[in-house]
Image (tube, rainbow, N blue to C red):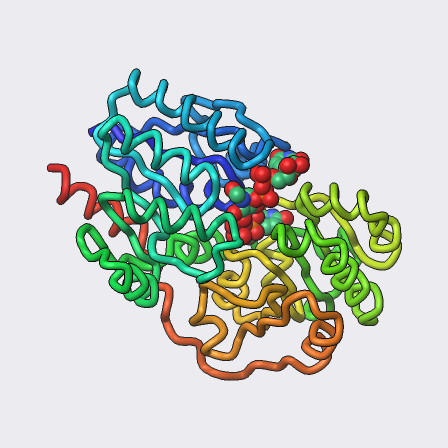
Length: 354
Ligand code: UD1
Ligand code: UDP
């Protein structure tokens, strides 16, 4: 059968790389890139290094307000769906590309499969939370990474089409682990194994607020540790706007976003991870690296319940305390599946549509 997969943002390329490989064994996949992320370091790098097939369509939607960006996506995706007439549309995660793909599809009566269904932060001020709730509501197949996700859907009365398959990012972590070792990036940056903090920041709650971004910068430049921060373009834009960029650049290794393999290499060898990313919280857990999360809540509750992730918000004191003393030792459960989520997704699609 013909499946249109909609991707657009960095984490979706990483997830789609795994699932694409499986579904292409039996189906025709038409890959649609919305163009939400477009800088080479945010897009092309991932296609090259993870050997993701060239997108059949790139809508070139780019950046904009939520309405502009999502609206342009819905219009462009609808055109492709009317032309290609697929039997299924596959969407990933919780970005505006996920929402655009799901909306365009259900409106022309094509069923939607949502990979990473059921995640909830219960914070509707996060754009992603709104996207998750809406996309889950209209999806026909809901592929959940965790038992918590299944439960969240159950609490909203969603049980039909729900499948617990595990986390495709765990598949990606296992698949790429060996490739990510010894990438030479530590030597290039002049940092030592186990002796630096790795940082990512891109959430609106941290970047759009001058106060929060300044508190994070303050903590990073004053912590006395080597810090590596591959900065998302959104963070760079706002660091510059708030005149925090130069101070940070002088105090730490502030670098361009890196590819998935270099990032994984940096993560596996870090002393601690400091992040507000969803995916990175899990990856820290997979690789047994303590994670300090610059948010007040998390969808990936298992990482915090097992003691490997501490939620500190954008509080300078809490960030510094956890840099100094957060030292998890507990056992990590196998909350994210067995590394075969992508195959399970492909098998369920076969069962449902054959
Ligand atoms: C988006 C997702 C977020 C996800 C993140 C992954 C939404 C609402 N947000 O956030 O859930 O965690 O991607 O990284 O979909 N920019 C560039 N070059 C690019 C891309 C973005 O310069 O290639 C800059 C632009 O100034 C843009 C800003 O980053 O306005 C934000 O980009 P956008 O795609 O709107 O949201 P993200 O913050 O990347
Ligand atoms: N990542 C990357 N390079 C970087 C920073 C992150 O390859 O410089 C990867 C990281 O390994 C993870 C994904 O990007 O797989 C997370 O994406 P992001 O934090 O942008 O989005 P979120 O997961 O919060 O939606």
